[in-house]
Amino acid sequence: MIFTAKAILFDMDGVLVDSASAVERVWRAWATEYGYDPERVVAQAHGRRSIETIRELAPHLDPERENLRVEQMEIEDKDGVVPLPGAAELLRNLPLGRFAIVTSATHALAEARLGFAGLPIPPRFIGGDDVVHGKPSPEPYLKGATLLGFTPDECLVFEDAPAGIAAARAAGMRVIALHTTCPARELKGADAVLASLAEVKMQFHEGIITLHADTVCVQES
Image 1: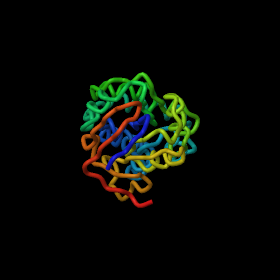
Image 2: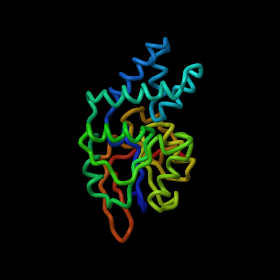
Image 3: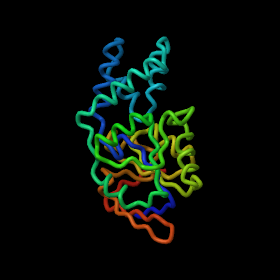
C-alpha cells in the first residue's frame, strides 16, 4: 500500500522504542504494592498517561505523588529498552520539520528512553506534560499537528495502542498501527496494521511524504 502525508506523528513506546518489559515491570511492582491485579493494571497503562491510569484505578491515592513515583521508577528502569526495527532509519531520513513525537510519557521519561535506545531526541515533540487530557483524547495529536504547522488531515500517525488510535481518529487523522504491543485484532480503527517500521519505505518529494508498505493488513472501516 501507499500512504501520502505532509507530516508524520509518531507515538514513542511500541513504535520507535521497545520499552514493554520496563513498562510491565514498573506497573506490576506498583500493582503488587497496592494489592491490584497486575494484569489489569498493565493492560490499562499501555498507551496512556500514568496519571490517568492512577486516577482511574486508585482514586483514593494522591495522583500527583504517585505519578512522580511511577515516572522515576520508569526512568531508572532501562533494562531491555532498545530501538524498534526501522525506527532509526525512518527518523534519519525524514525532514526535521515534517515529523514529531507525540507520547504519553513526560519529556523527562521520553528523553531517557530515547537516550537508552540510542535514538535522537527530535526538536519537536509533545509529551504527557504538555497536555491537559491525554490519549484517547485528540488533544495530544492536535497539538502535534499545530506544532508542525499542518492541519490534521495532512498528518499521518503511527501508533501501537487502542487509546492512541482513538486519539488520532478523534483528531481527524489517518493511522497506521504496529502490532508490537497489542495483537492486530485489538487495533481496530487503524487504516492498516504493520509488524514494524522496517516494513516502511519513505520518499520525500515536492513537500509530500510517500510511504510504501509491502506487507500490510488493511482494517475494515
